[in-house]
Image 1 (tube, rainbow, N blue to C red):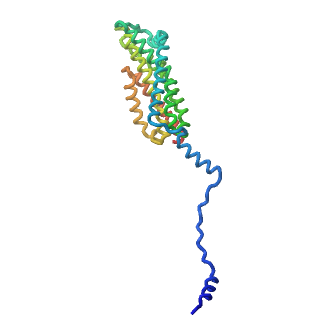
Image 2: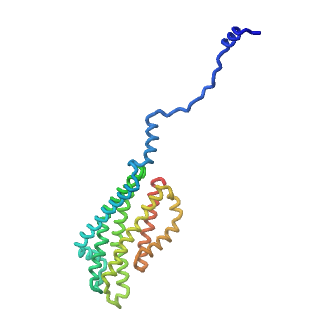
Image 3: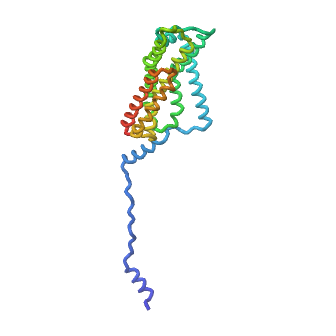
Length: 278
C-alpha cells in the first residue's frame, strides 16, 4: 500500500491540465467604427426631449393660434387691395361682361377672393408653424429630407397656379366665349365666375403635388421607381379622370391640358425617385 507522503509526491509530479482557450470575437476599437455605429443610431432617434400629452396639446394650440392669426392678417391685407386682385383675375375673360345679379353679390365675392388670397399669402407662415410642430418628432435622417420636400412642394404649387392662370383658365374661357358667341351675349355672374376661377387655380396647384407624393412614397420604401413605371397605364387613366374631376368646366381642352400636365409630372417624379436610387 502506498503511504500518504508517496501519494502526495506522485500528485505533485503530474503536469497541470490545461483548459481549452476560448477565442473572443475581435472588437472594432477604431474610433471611425464607433462613430459610424453611433451615427446610424443617432440618425434614427429624435434630438429633442419627449413631451407629455398636455405639452403636445398646448404646443398644438399655440401653433394653430399663430397660423389663424396670420391668415386673418393676410385676409385683411388682401381685402384692402381686393379691387386690384379682382381686376387681375378678370384678365383671362376677355370679351365677357360681369354682372351683379343680387344685392351685395360683389361684396361677398370680395370676401371670398380676399379669403383665398389671404390664405395664399399666409401659407409660408402656416407651413412654418406646421414644421415647427412636427419637427421635434422627426429623426435626423427624416429632417434631411424635410427642406427639399417643402421647397419642392411650394415651387410646384406656385407653378400650378401660374399654369392655371396662363393656360387652363384662358383655354376654358375661350371655349365658352366662342361657343355660341354669335347667338348669345356673354354676360356672366361675377360670383359664378370667381367660383370657377378660384376652384381651378387651387385644384391645379394641388394636382401639381404629384411628384412630392411620389418622392415621399419612394423615400419611405412603400413604392419603388420601377413599380411606378410599371403602372403607367393606370396612372394615365387616373390623370384623365382627375382632369375631369378637378376642372370645374366640362370642355375637353381644359381637362386634356390638366391631365397631360399631371402625366408629365408623374413621369418626372419617377425620374426623381430613380435618381435617388429608390
